[in-house]
Image 1 (cartoon, one colour):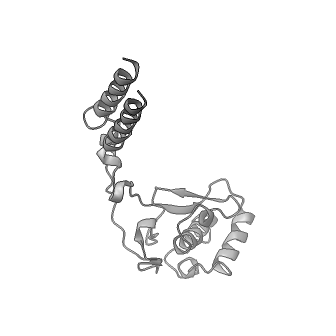
Image 2: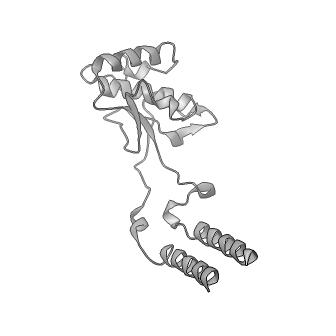
Length: 174
């Protein structure tokens, strides 16, 4: 009986793995998505300024684009300024959650924070630890990820999943 249970569990796991929605599958089974590290909208201006000072100084971020005359300079919006600095640091420091924290004033988003001539490089623009064209004027295409088919409850993933549960139940209880 334990061999049957082991076999049924193996089949269940295999069917579940093979029945993931195609829209969630990217390279090597991981959903690829542009991500940016941006300032939280509820962060205090003083804390953001301190984080910008550190990020552009000891943190080593490329803050040229947020200096006066740069493509991302906006003296009236500290969140945009902080977002550029945070994102540059995040991209240069391993794309980890820790590299997008800044005393809990930053968060990851899939919404492109680019504006006007200020184009933010994303997590997908990093190639072997270096950022492609991080001048602040990088040209990025529109987001082409189509996840609209993920809400379907049939066909590609639901039926194989249901079948695997029924199969496991029949073997285990009958």
